[in-house]
Image (tube, rainbow, N blue to C red; front, side, top):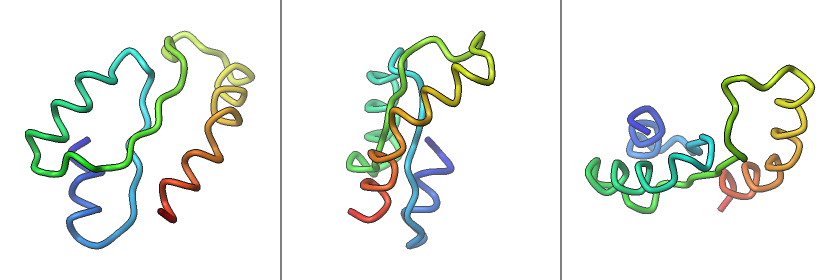
Length: 72
């Protein structure tokens, strides 16, 4: 979240991507960092043990949301 916020504050579109387990933490951190509206996209948890195919499927499922967040 720190990097995403830094890029946004410096005029570079960015999107925070994490597993949905961290939605509340991401919201709290964005507010603490002073940019509560920073774009966030969440993939189904867990990702730590996902293999390459599973990660590709997770990415495919959210790619349109990521693109939309970048051009919003």
